[in-house]
Length: 260
Ligand code: SF4
Ligand code: FES
Image (cartoon, rainbow, N blue to C red; front, side, top):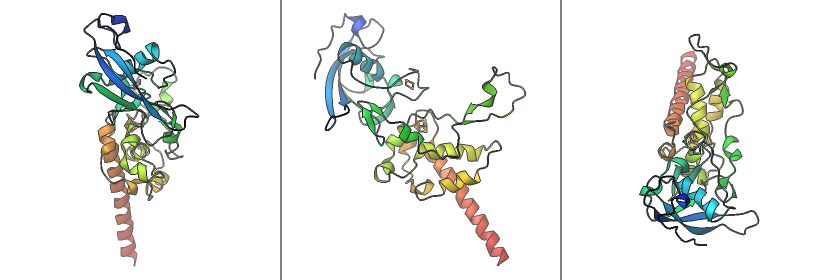
Protein backbone atom coordinates (compact mmCIF):
# COMPACT_ATOMS: atom_id res chain seq x y z
CA UNK A 1 0.00 0.00 0.00
CA UNK A 2 1.41 3.38 -0.93
CA UNK A 3 0.08 6.82 -0.11
CA UNK A 4 0.81 10.08 -1.86
CA UNK A 5 2.66 12.84 -0.01
CA UNK A 6 0.61 15.83 1.07
CA UNK A 7 1.39 19.28 -0.37
CA UNK A 8 3.89 21.19 1.77
CA UNK A 9 1.36 24.00 2.31
CA UNK A 10 -1.00 21.55 4.04
CA UNK A 11 0.44 22.11 7.53
CA UNK A 12 -2.58 20.53 9.21
CA UNK A 13 -1.80 17.25 7.51
CA UNK A 14 1.95 17.29 8.23
CA UNK A 15 3.22 14.80 10.79
CA UNK A 16 4.27 17.55 13.17
CA UNK A 17 2.88 20.85 14.32
CA UNK A 18 4.91 23.75 12.91
CA UNK A 19 3.87 25.29 9.59
CA UNK A 20 7.37 24.91 8.13
CA UNK A 21 8.44 23.35 4.83
CA UNK A 22 7.34 19.73 4.64
CA UNK A 23 9.21 16.93 2.91
CA UNK A 24 8.06 13.42 2.33
CA UNK A 25 9.53 10.32 3.97
CA UNK A 26 8.58 6.81 3.02
CA UNK A 27 7.78 4.62 6.01
CA UNK A 28 8.01 0.90 5.48
CA UNK A 29 5.86 -0.47 8.27
CA UNK A 30 5.68 -4.04 9.61
CA UNK A 31 2.11 -5.34 9.48
CA UNK A 32 0.65 -8.44 11.05
CA UNK A 33 -2.92 -9.19 12.11
CA UNK A 34 -4.28 -12.24 13.90
CA UNK A 35 -5.07 -14.87 11.27
CA UNK A 36 -2.41 -13.64 8.84
CA UNK A 37 -0.23 -16.44 7.56
CA UNK A 38 2.88 -14.29 7.80
CA UNK A 39 3.79 -10.66 8.40
CA UNK A 40 4.40 -8.23 5.54
CA UNK A 41 5.46 -4.61 5.08
CA UNK A 42 3.38 -1.70 3.80
CA UNK A 43 4.79 1.61 2.63
CA UNK A 44 3.34 5.03 3.32
CA UNK A 45 4.62 8.39 2.12
CA UNK A 46 4.33 10.78 5.03
CA UNK A 47 4.79 14.57 4.98
CA UNK A 48 7.30 15.54 7.66
CA UNK A 49 9.00 18.59 9.07
CA UNK A 50 12.37 18.76 10.83
CA UNK A 51 11.09 17.80 14.25
CA UNK A 52 8.64 15.10 13.18
CA UNK A 53 9.19 12.01 15.28
CA UNK A 54 8.67 8.43 14.18
CA UNK A 55 5.64 8.37 16.45
CA UNK A 56 4.25 11.53 14.77
CA UNK A 57 4.68 9.85 11.39
CA UNK A 58 2.94 6.66 12.55
CA UNK A 59 0.08 8.65 14.05
CA UNK A 60 -0.22 10.53 10.74
CA UNK A 61 -0.61 7.18 8.98
CA UNK A 62 -3.25 6.14 11.51
CA UNK A 63 -5.22 9.34 11.04
CA UNK A 64 -4.85 9.86 7.29
CA UNK A 65 -4.17 6.46 5.74
CA UNK A 66 -4.97 3.42 7.84
CA UNK A 67 -6.85 3.49 11.13
CA UNK A 68 -6.13 -0.19 11.69
CA UNK A 69 -2.41 0.37 12.22
CA UNK A 70 -1.78 -0.77 15.81
CA UNK A 71 0.94 0.72 18.01
CA UNK A 72 1.47 1.64 21.65
CA UNK A 73 2.32 5.03 23.09
CA UNK A 74 1.40 7.17 26.04
CA UNK A 75 3.63 9.83 27.60
CA UNK A 76 5.31 11.25 24.44
CA UNK A 77 8.45 12.16 26.42
CA UNK A 78 10.53 8.99 26.95
CA UNK A 79 9.06 8.17 30.35
CA UNK A 80 6.50 5.39 29.98
CA UNK A 81 8.46 2.99 27.75
CA UNK A 82 5.42 2.00 25.69
CA UNK A 83 6.55 3.25 22.26
CA UNK A 84 9.67 1.10 21.87
CA UNK A 85 10.23 -0.05 18.28
CA UNK A 86 12.96 -1.06 15.87
CA UNK A 87 13.66 1.80 13.50
CA UNK A 88 15.98 1.03 10.59
CA UNK A 89 17.06 -2.05 12.51
CA UNK A 90 17.94 -0.27 15.77
CA UNK A 91 15.96 -0.09 19.00
CA UNK A 92 14.43 3.32 19.68
CA UNK A 93 11.66 5.12 21.51
CA UNK A 94 9.44 6.37 18.68
CA UNK A 95 8.28 9.44 20.62
CA UNK A 96 11.76 10.99 20.85
CA UNK A 97 13.31 9.72 17.59
CA UNK A 98 13.08 12.33 14.86
CA UNK A 99 12.88 11.24 11.24
CA UNK A 100 15.42 13.91 10.24
CA UNK A 101 18.52 11.69 10.30
CA UNK A 102 16.89 8.43 9.28
CA UNK A 103 17.08 8.66 5.49
CA UNK A 104 14.34 8.88 2.89
CA UNK A 105 13.00 5.39 3.58
CA UNK A 106 12.48 4.37 7.19
CA UNK A 107 11.72 0.80 8.21
CA UNK A 108 9.63 0.48 11.36
CA UNK A 109 9.22 -2.87 13.10
CA UNK A 110 8.11 -4.15 16.51
CA UNK A 111 10.83 -4.84 19.05
CA UNK A 112 12.39 -8.29 18.75
CA UNK A 113 12.40 -11.31 21.06
CA UNK A 114 8.80 -10.81 22.21
CA UNK A 115 5.73 -12.25 20.51
CA UNK A 116 4.02 -9.88 18.09
CA UNK A 117 0.34 -9.50 18.96
CA UNK A 118 -0.59 -7.20 16.09
CA UNK A 119 1.38 -4.84 13.82
CA UNK A 120 3.86 -2.97 16.07
CA UNK A 121 2.46 -4.27 19.36
CA UNK A 122 4.29 -7.05 21.22
CA UNK A 123 3.29 -9.04 24.28
CA UNK A 124 5.03 -7.17 27.11
CA UNK A 125 3.86 -9.80 29.61
CA UNK A 126 6.73 -11.92 28.27
CA UNK A 127 9.17 -9.24 29.49
CA UNK A 128 7.67 -9.03 32.97
CA UNK A 129 7.50 -12.84 33.27
CA UNK A 130 11.30 -12.85 33.20
CA UNK A 131 11.63 -10.90 36.41
CA UNK A 132 12.31 -12.91 39.59
CA UNK A 133 9.18 -13.72 41.57
CA UNK A 134 10.63 -12.45 44.85
CA UNK A 135 11.36 -9.09 43.35
CA UNK A 136 8.58 -6.53 43.37
CA UNK A 137 8.64 -3.85 40.69
CA UNK A 138 7.91 -1.28 43.35
CA UNK A 139 9.62 -1.23 46.71
CA UNK A 140 8.96 0.28 50.06
CA UNK A 141 10.75 3.58 50.09
CA UNK A 142 13.42 4.63 52.52
CA UNK A 143 12.40 6.78 55.42
CA UNK A 144 13.42 10.30 54.52
CA UNK A 145 12.61 12.53 57.48
CA UNK A 146 13.50 15.71 55.57
CA UNK A 147 11.18 14.89 52.64
CA UNK A 148 7.63 16.22 52.31
CA UNK A 149 5.98 13.71 49.96
CA UNK A 150 2.32 13.80 48.95
CA UNK A 151 0.02 11.72 51.13
CA UNK A 152 0.15 8.01 50.31
CA UNK A 153 3.17 8.13 48.00
CA UNK A 154 5.72 7.42 50.72
CA UNK A 155 5.13 3.66 50.59
CA UNK A 156 6.39 3.18 47.04
CA UNK A 157 9.28 4.18 44.87
CA UNK A 158 10.47 2.96 41.48
CA UNK A 159 13.26 0.46 41.87
CA UNK A 160 15.50 2.21 39.36
CA UNK A 161 15.48 4.35 36.24
CA UNK A 162 14.21 1.48 34.10
CA UNK A 163 11.07 2.37 32.15
CA UNK A 164 10.39 -1.30 31.24
CA UNK A 165 10.48 -0.55 27.53
CA UNK A 166 12.02 -3.90 26.54
CA UNK A 167 14.55 -2.32 24.15
CA UNK A 168 17.43 -4.11 25.90
CA UNK A 169 15.75 -7.47 25.46
CA UNK A 170 15.11 -6.68 21.80
CA UNK A 171 18.76 -5.72 21.21
CA UNK A 172 20.23 -8.71 23.05
CA UNK A 173 21.71 -11.20 20.54
CA UNK A 174 21.84 -13.94 23.18
CA UNK A 175 18.05 -14.07 23.68
CA UNK A 176 17.61 -15.10 20.04
CA UNK A 177 19.31 -18.44 20.67
CA UNK A 178 18.66 -18.85 24.40
CA UNK A 179 15.03 -18.05 25.03
CA UNK A 180 15.23 -19.17 28.66
CA UNK A 181 17.84 -16.48 29.35
CA UNK A 182 16.11 -14.03 31.71
CA UNK A 183 17.68 -11.07 29.92
CA UNK A 184 19.16 -7.71 30.78
CA UNK A 185 16.17 -5.83 32.23
CA UNK A 186 15.39 -8.50 34.82
CA UNK A 187 19.05 -8.90 35.81
CA UNK A 188 19.52 -5.13 36.04
CA UNK A 189 16.53 -4.91 38.35
CA UNK A 190 17.94 -7.67 40.56
CA UNK A 191 21.32 -5.96 40.72
CA UNK A 192 19.66 -2.72 41.77
CA UNK A 193 18.17 -4.48 44.80
CA UNK A 194 21.46 -6.23 45.61
CA UNK A 195 23.27 -2.90 45.36
CA UNK A 196 20.77 -1.12 47.60
CA UNK A 197 18.73 -3.74 49.50
CA UNK A 198 16.90 -1.35 51.87
CA UNK A 199 16.50 -4.25 54.26
CA UNK A 200 15.44 -6.74 51.56
CA UNK A 201 16.85 -10.27 51.72
CA UNK A 202 19.12 -10.62 48.68
CA UNK A 203 20.22 -14.28 49.05
CA UNK A 204 17.26 -15.59 47.02
CA UNK A 205 17.81 -12.94 44.39
CA UNK A 206 21.49 -13.86 44.07
CA UNK A 207 20.59 -17.54 43.85
CA UNK A 208 18.10 -16.71 41.09
CA UNK A 209 20.74 -14.75 39.18
CA UNK A 210 23.41 -17.44 39.71
CA UNK A 211 22.06 -19.72 37.00
CA UNK A 212 23.17 -20.81 33.52
CA UNK A 213 20.19 -18.83 32.20
CA UNK A 214 20.95 -15.94 34.55
CA UNK A 215 24.10 -13.81 34.67
CA UNK A 216 26.26 -16.56 33.19
CA UNK A 217 24.31 -16.62 29.90
CA UNK A 218 25.30 -13.03 29.07
CA UNK A 219 28.10 -12.76 26.46
CA UNK A 220 29.01 -9.22 27.50
CA UNK A 221 28.28 -7.76 24.09
CA UNK A 222 26.76 -4.65 25.70
CA UNK A 223 24.09 -4.18 23.00
CA UNK A 224 21.54 -3.81 25.82
CA UNK A 225 23.41 -0.85 27.24
CA UNK A 226 23.62 0.78 23.81
CA UNK A 227 19.87 0.32 23.30
CA UNK A 228 18.77 1.47 26.76
CA UNK A 229 17.20 4.95 26.57
CA UNK A 230 17.24 5.44 30.32
CA UNK A 231 20.90 5.09 31.32
CA UNK A 232 20.25 1.93 33.30
CA UNK A 233 23.38 0.34 31.79
CA UNK A 234 22.09 -3.22 32.16
CA UNK A 235 25.29 -4.86 30.91
CA UNK A 236 27.37 -3.20 33.61
CA UNK A 237 24.80 -4.29 36.19
CA UNK A 238 25.08 -7.89 34.97
CA UNK A 239 28.88 -7.66 35.30
CA UNK A 240 28.42 -6.24 38.80
CA UNK A 241 26.19 -9.18 39.76
CA UNK A 242 28.81 -11.58 38.43
CA UNK A 243 31.44 -9.83 40.56
CA UNK A 244 29.26 -10.12 43.65
CA UNK A 245 28.63 -13.82 43.01
CA UNK A 246 32.29 -14.58 42.32
CA UNK A 247 33.32 -12.69 45.45
CA UNK A 248 30.93 -14.76 47.54
CA UNK A 249 32.17 -18.00 45.96
CA UNK A 250 35.80 -17.09 46.64
CA UNK A 251 35.11 -16.16 50.25
CA UNK A 252 33.19 -19.42 50.78
CA UNK A 253 36.05 -21.38 49.20
CA UNK A 254 38.63 -19.73 51.47
CA UNK A 255 36.51 -20.43 54.55
CA UNK A 256 36.28 -24.06 53.53
CA UNK A 257 40.05 -24.30 52.95
CA UNK A 258 40.71 -22.85 56.41
CA UNK A 259 38.48 -25.41 58.09
CA UNK A 260 39.99 -28.44 56.29
S1 SF4 B 1 16.99 -1.62 31.24
FE1 SF4 B 1 16.79 0.15 29.81
S2 SF4 B 1 16.31 -0.81 27.81
FE2 SF4 B 1 15.92 -2.37 29.39
S3 SF4 B 1 13.73 -2.22 29.86
FE3 SF4 B 1 14.83 -0.88 31.34
S4 SF4 B 1 14.90 1.17 30.39
FE4 SF4 B 1 14.31 -0.28 28.77
S1 FES C 1 5.35 7.41 24.52
FE1 FES C 1 6.15 7.09 26.53
S2 FES C 1 8.24 6.56 26.15
FE2 FES C 1 7.46 7.09 24.19
